[in-house]
Image 1 (spheres, rainbow, N blue to C red):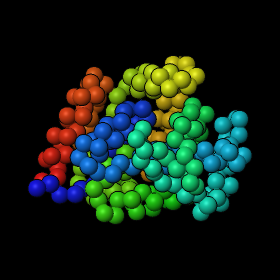
Image 2 (cartoon, rainbow, N blue to C red):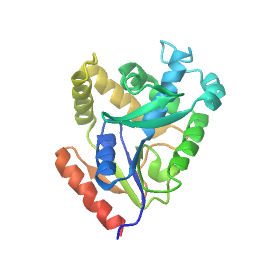
Image 3 (cartoon, rainbow, N blue to C red):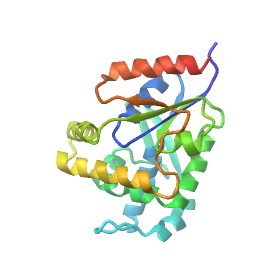
Image 4 (spheres, rainbow, N blue to C red):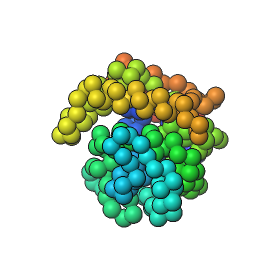
Length: 228
């Protein structure tokens, strides 16, 4: 009989980790937590309240001051999981390129990471969750029973993200998306607080040439082995 475990899926932006984490959680009956959506929600709050500038700078002190006023949760609907910011459904807004352009800067603020890590750990107190992000297996749940690190080339990830935006009717260019992917990679890898890196005991999944069905089957097989 399978035991309830914590599944941590980390990796680079637009590597498909959220889609695969969501699909795995649905398949095995676990709760899915999109940690990236939480950082996007904080970013949206900062943008709405004048804490970001057109030149790309962020008022980190102002963001830190409002953290106690920010409440994030998830609501499951027939259409899928929606991110709630202080009771408002912001799922569509947080996926816009405008938010993508600031999220790595917001996520690099130590106080933001501390606040959201504590929130994420509370979600996993009873186990039975799949969480994806940048530091889930290294910082949030270093003792997770199953850890995966997902990667693909920047060009492959940009093409996926571009196709996703176009499908949703969001204006974007491939060049803009690729530049954003490269920029976010740099910030994620070099930030002082919880930089993006593979946990020593994580299994690497390079899904550059894999179909969605192939990667989902790979994850399910790993889960079956880790949950025994």
